[in-house]
Amino acid sequence: MSSKVYEVLQWASSFFKQHGKEEAAAEWLLRHHLQMTRAQFFSSLREPIDESVKERLMEDAKKHALMHVPIQYLIGYEYFYGRRFFVNEDVLIPRPETEELVAEVLKQINNMFSDHKDIEVVDVGTGSGAIAVTLALENRSLRVSAIDIASSSLEVAKQNARQLGAHVEFIEGDLLQPLIKAGRKVDVVVSNPPYIPEIDIASLSPVVKEHEPLRALVGGKDGLHFYRRFMEELPKVLRSRGLVAFEIGADQGEAVASMLKATFPDAKVEVVHDINGKERMVFAELMKN
Image (cartoon, rainbow, N blue to C red; front, side, top):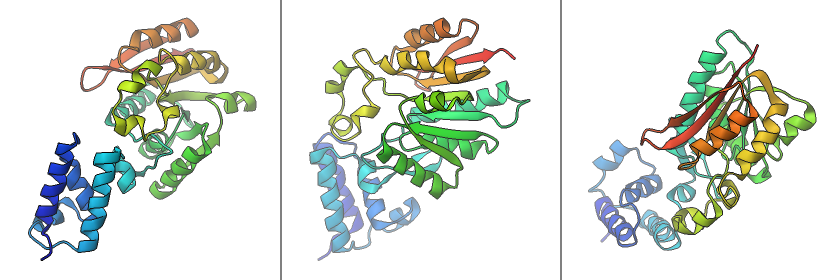
């Protein structure tokens, strides 16, 4: 006798709970395999489930619970700013906190450049392209570029830009070096760089440390390595009226803000907290005309 949808859901939920994983992930995974919306799923709970679907679901459930593979890599996507982004193990899974960075960047661009056209924005360390693609779609007057050191990450970002209809220029390179070499200047630099201190990697969830790319997570011994490098490179690419927007890790606000103040003494530097009250973003506004 074939299983019902709700029985498979109960099995997956308890299996995840037993192995310290989020029970809610069971619904997400099962809906993916059934290719159903939430409404369709809940109206089908008492329907029989196809055996092949059940087998694939159980296989993926074991990969998540026992091998710690993130659900997003199993189903191949994550939602960011209301849009579906393709992800794989070449890129970091977009986080909700980064949506707050994007929202704040859009707001600050509107405030700072209301009298400007053709505002040039570069997203450094783009990964899946979530920041760059979202900025390009939310404000179509922006000219958005995105840089990443890994060609495999850029392939993912390019696919997302194509699927979502965003016009973004993708550049392979190390931090701002491609712009410096080309003598290019921009109005806005935004980045969610690797900022986890080396010592903290061991304490991360195995779902993160065993599967997400470490190059996108580790920011040197104290987590600040890439911010220091930015301080050397930013003055070479930022126009006199410009905006720097960084995502940061816990308790890094003061350190990153101090670096920006030292690099741009006349800038207005601000540490912004996320919805959970944690230091999450640092902005520097350069207002010289």
